[in-house]
Image (cartoon, rainbow, N blue to C red; front, side):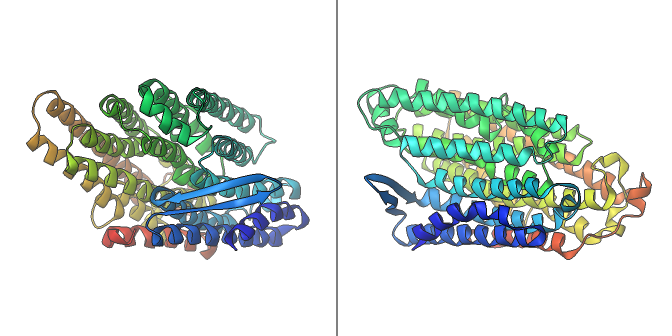
Length: 488
C-alpha cells in the first residue's frame, strides 16, 4: 500500500503546474503529507520488525527496485519527515510575498523541486543498489539546485547555484569512482560490493574517495565553500531544509559506509576526527565573525557538522581500540545530534526569515529591540540558540553531554598516544562550544536586546500565525528530545 502511495506521489508531483495561487500550495502540501506518512510508516514497521525491513518498491517488466530499511534508515526517515513538515508549513506564509513577484511557472517549479527533494532524500536512505542510490543522489542534488535558484532572474543567485552544482558534481564523480572500484572485483554494484571489497582490500583509499564525496555534501572543511552562499540566497524555508536535513544526507552516506567497514578503523577514525575538528573550529569561528543572520547560521551548520563528525569519529575510535563506552557514547551522541541540529537550525532559520519579513534586513547590526516588538519570534529564536549551545534542558545538551561523557571516561582509562589524541579532541570540542556560545550571545544581544539601530527594526511587528506555528512545532520538538531523549 505504501509503495503505491509513494509511486502515486511521485507521478502526481507534476500536477503543481495545473494550479495557481494558494491552491498550488495546498496540492503540494497534500503530496508532502503523503510522503511523510509513507516514510514514517516504513520507519515504524522496520523498527517493529527488529530494525530491518525489505521489500520491492517497484516490480515491472523484470525491473526490480529493492528497498532496505534498518534502524539507521528509520532514524533518518524520521528526521526528514519532521524537518520537511515544519519547512513546508513555514513555506505557506513565507511564499506569500513571492506570489506577488514571481510567475506562476517559477512557483510551480519551486514546489516541484521541493517535492522531488523530499522524495529523493527518502530514496537515498532506503536504496542500497549502486545505480538506484546514485540516481537518487543526483536527483537530490538537482532538486536542491532548483530550490537555490528560485529567483533565477538575479545573476548573483544563478552564479551561486552553478557554483553549488559544480562542487557537488565533483563529489558525485568521486562517489561513482568508489562504487566502480568496489564493483570491479566481480561483486555487485552497490553498498554490498563495498562491504565485499573492504573484506579483501584495505578500505582506507576507497573510503577516502567516499568521505570526500559525501563530505562535500555535509559541509566538511575544506569542502564547504558552497554552503554559506547557498544558505544566504535561498528562501528561508529552503535554507532551513538544506541546513537541517539536506547536508545530513552526506553524514548518512558516511555512516552507511561505516556499517560495511570492519578493518582500518583507527586510521579512518583519525581521518574523520581531523576533518571534524577542523570543520567545527573553522565553522564556529567564522560564525562568530558574521553580521548577516543567515550566513551566521550557515557557518554554525558547518560547526555542527564538525560536532556530529567528532561523535562518529570517537565511536569508531572506541571500536578500533575496544573501548565500548566510547563507541556507544560517541555514536549515540553524534547520531542524536543530527536530529537535534535539524530541529534547532530549522527553527533558527525560520526565526531569521520572520525577522527579515518584518524588518526587510538580515544585517544583525541594523536590528535591535526585537524582544519588545517581536516577542514570540524572539523567544523561539532564543530556544533554538540555547539548544545549539548545548544547555539543559534542551536537546543539544543531551547529545553533546554524551560525547563529552565518552571523552572524559576514555581520558581516565587510556594512556599514551591515544590519550593525547582524546585530549586534543576534548580541548577542540570545548573551543567549538565556546565560540558557539559567544556567537549566539552576540547575535541575541545585538538583534534582540539592544536599542534598535534602524527605523525598520524600531517599527517591526510580530509575524502572522502561519509563520509562527511551524516555529512552535520545531520548538516543542526541541523540548521533547531535551526532556525525554529516549522518545527519539
